[in-house]
Image 1 (cartoon, rainbow, N blue to C red):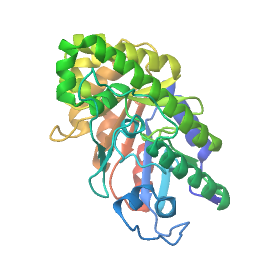
Image 2: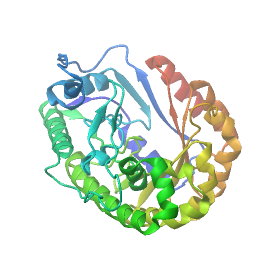
Image 3: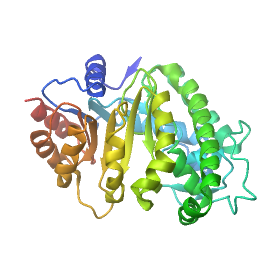
Length: 357
């Protein structure tokens, strides 16, 4: 068995405590570093095309295995393979019929397909859809590799995005904003269909990833019971009243299905909806991302305190020099930090050691 980290059980206990807001007197940190000596290496075939780069298991699986082999995992960071890259943005749009648009080797996008509500596509999950077949093939190939090489690791889900965010991609955000005023019932009906497809994508993908234990979304947070990230970046374009009418009912359904949820609060434009989110008793945590041009996580201490005072856990990305600031100014209970940067293994260990003391 090839192991990528030590102290797995202690890390699981720490994350379970974070989910339940049980204090240990110190925050939890997802810390990864650049290994001095890789623990696993495979030959890495060159992709023949951009499509090959994203979708060919013979290209993708060795690449992500080598990335894992070069990574040191500490704190509450777990070795998780994501055969369907989170950089395939809003893949649920593709599951529901949107054509893919390759940008480069860093991201892909989708084209909108709802020209009018009179000629709206069915918006149904189809297991014969090209991109679901690609997803299934990648995840099955990843499962085979984990078993073949006897890897002590986990498999993460595709980034399914949020149903209303998916709908904005299928329609076009600007047009959808107008539809909320001019065609509200059509929007609600379409959102309901997208939500059903989103649930089906989760059920099918988690059935494969779940062979290796817990649930992992792109946030990398351990959970042995069903968990998901909730998203609606589209909501930065609408008022709190519209959020309450069109978005909140769908979020309530998602929270009722998943025992553990984290809402992805992305940028200052989303803050206007925070009171609605804090009013949801079963929402476990809020992830805050300042967004481009809005500073760093440590510039938003008052907002993070407001989330904690609302009874929710806090999940933030931060730079190494922010760890001490956030640790000292926020309640350790329910605080999870993910430290960013290409950090050498020894430096990563030192940061963890400093927080531990």
